Amino acid sequence: MKFSNIVSVKKIGRDFFEISFNIDSEVRAGQFLMVWVPGVKEIPMSVSNLKNPITISFKAIGETTKRLSAMRPGDRIFYRGPYGNTYPDPKGKTAYVAGGTGIASLLPLISAYPGDVYYGMRTAEDIVYKNLVNFVSTDDGSMGFKGNVVDLFIREKRKYDTVFVCGPEPMMKYFHDKINRNEYGNIYYSLERLMKCGVGICDSCSINGFRVCRDGTVFDHEQLNIMDEFGTVRRAESGRRIFLK
Image (cartoon, rainbow, N blue to C red; front, side, top):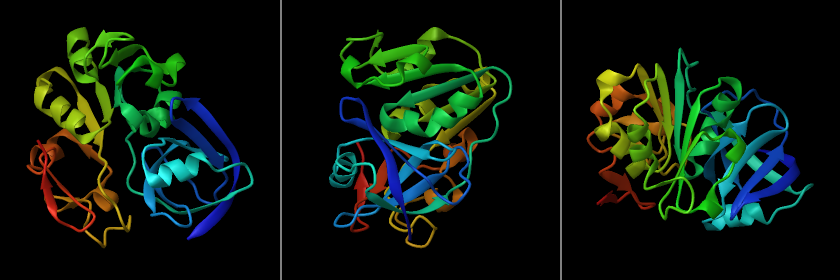
């Protein structure tokens, strides 16, 4: 476990924050850190800016993220990593499909490789990084397309050589099942699961034998084809299997 002093804390949207701090390791697009605040649990966090001071972007919705959002410059933040594999470099015409805080994982690619950005949130108040987004969807229709970002992507009927997808698992499952695979080149997904160790030991993030923290978090479309637990089953903190609706 290492620690760093926080350089900055920014509120960039409703309950959406960025924290920047320096680390002594190189981080690549798609990798994550295990971040810990004393008194609460350790959680995986995507790195949204790779160069020092690096940045983690998150929504304050749980105990740990709420504690993080209350921190100030100079406070210590504890971390392990970076862990996980990386996104491949995109080839040809590229699209990014993000739901919720999933946009954080895609930001390093979006910044380095221009492409069409599709972003979905519940309401207009939740939309962040508006200057980077080409197509917006909101559940309530308060901005852009009314509905989910997957239906927006399909409605646009644009062709891409490379597509990157990150968001809540039900959203990515919907994308995987609805998309016409023959119309696109390479499709990559960054998965998010309960992680306790981050290094492939505890098996809490396992999907059909794939350890999301070690074998991912980035998987291609064909790998998801053989994960029948993806979008259907997850594990509770206790290890109990929970069947998703």
